[in-house]
Amino acid sequence: MDGQSPQDTGRDAVRLLREASAALTALHARFAARHGMHPTDVRALAWLLDARRAGTPVTAGLLGSRLGLNSAGTTALIDRLEHLGHVRRVPDRQDRRRVLIDLEQRAATLAATVHAPLLDRSAELAKEYDDHQLDAVQQFLTAVLAAARGTAG
Image 1 (cartoon, rainbow, N blue to C red):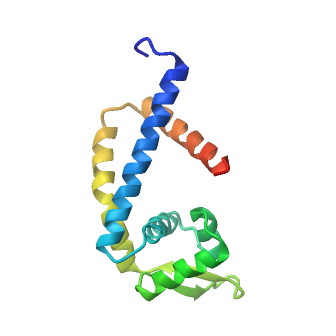
Image 2 (image 1 turned 180 degrees about the vertical axis):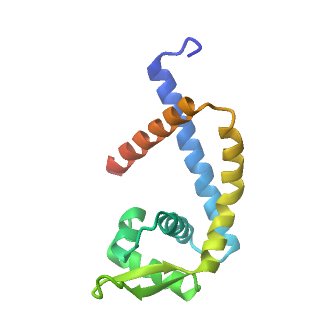
């Protein structure tokens, strides 16, 4: 730990996470501006892409809760994305009372472009760590994310 206490190391890690978060927010804002979107739209597309990859059906309520939006904000978001041709509302085949938010393929391709360079670079960096180290990093980030989601803002 180079003479640092665990508390100092933890604070440094949180500071770096804050800086990484700010850098990602700026990346999303630049991408959104280039494509005539709101930064929240970009966050939504990224989350919808992750949900698609995981095979998770997405309702408006789930999308809104993941993005921290109320019902009106979620409706406005989906309306914007639908108007831009990025998503469509489709009836749920299992429960016809529900409507799912379906990510259009061109939007998936567009959303992937914002993160592809970062993902590629991160994959290269990950090669420098062994499985144990990567597991520790993932556990730490998962715990910090859980703590952040549980913290009132």
